[in-house]
Picture 1 (cartoon, rainbow, N blue to C red):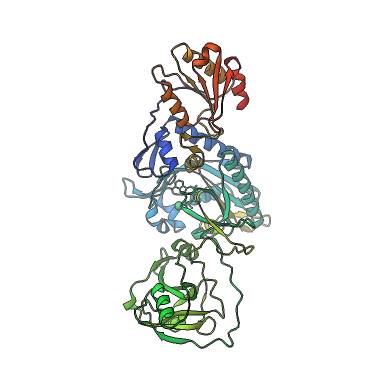
Picture 2: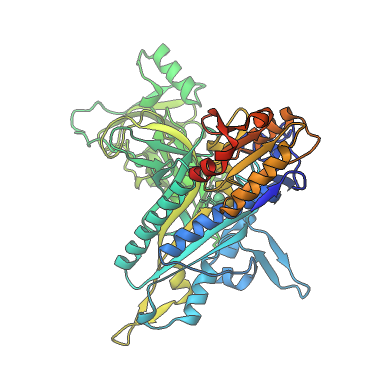
Length: 577
Ligand code: ATP
Ligand code: MG
């Protein structure tokens, strides 16, 4: 491959685009790799398309190596498939829906479990056919609430999705492990730094699940990390170690106090410390938040009170994951629920009201709390779990903080931000059940198939690589994904450009991918700036040294520069690749 800057369809920009906040977005636009069409919808220019294809190639090679077989499904899909699994409704506003000329409902596929399941069902029927893993690299559509950061969170994006089909749980575990290993190879080859973290399987209803998160300060996912034992989990999946239950005997009796004008934790703590000399902190209070929980596609709705230590908020994402597929909304219609007094809710009455009450795992039997007394302007102290109230269970919904206790080893957890680049999970039989996907076993009896589902953000990876690999001058591509191996810059009034082109041709003949700056009337300064911005790993400058037979070899990663004889340039560069 030989690309000539004199004819390459490329315009670099001097300034950052006005709508860009994160480095990858700024640089990919400035370097002419992508262009915005609409929010979350981008076009790929020639250099960007090459990088995207390089990422896809690495993914494809590793998927094939692990025994996956590539297929391709349409993006435009009829409603029926998603109706059968309930996801036509479950997806809500997140999918693009459209109608054909006859009024039939269609959607643009956000993910393809249904289609894969159906295809396997129609082609395979015997236990001898299994296991099988199929994958595709395809464009997905999701009407994301907040498309962001260029191609990082698009509404149209390229994903590799694969699905494993096994006869039993052990088979599924094997398929899952194979994917895990393949993903490690993929992300290593892409030059990405990442962390494998425990995840919840959420609405998909599976068991084991892990995410590959690329740590970056601009990431939208929060995850915890234990530097002592290596435990890592996304915020939704972190478990809170419960302290041991304590003896109830001998604890002072519950006492109701007048606390006028204290509907918030802050005002309450302040009041009790000033007026009652208690010396408490927010962590000694029990905050009770009321939610209305609904279930997609069902009329069922219930009230749920969640109790968390008062120094913590209920984290909406953790709550959502804990209740999935149920959806929780803050309850505001207090006039419709006598017994619940806004700002003064305590758990003592919830059993009598028939309202479900779930608490943070720290609220164990024998712990005493300051909480609402279910009367305006009154709170109760010494309210003991297991004596004065009896929760219906625990829920992981309180916010997670740096310094929280590691559930595995007890050390302090740190909190980091990352971007999800891959996700593997054991789906189990949800889709196989919906489609009655069975294989006929050796004894003639049907065996229900168990599935795994695995995704890689192909277009997102391009942005994440850029996010992790850049400096103040521009992009710095790892060789495996770089749009070319070497960027040859010819600059000067003698025959520098001719020599540059000649070297480019020789390198191309050796199988290298070469970009040569052969623009006749562009200043050396502009050419150097472009070379740094475009970010190819090796830069060779044919300039003033030509008369002495020397060129300058630059390493874009280290910034190191050295003079080398032009006669050796081809050998030297070929050896680098
Ligand atoms: P996120 O939490 O970032 O929205 P997700 O949990 O919805 O991701 P999956 O449905 O598991 O993601 O999709 C598989 C992979 O596809 C993700 O790991 C991610 O790399 C990529 N991906 C998901 N949504 C987008 C998007 N809007 N734009 C680009 N890539 C995406
Ligand atoms: Mg998503």
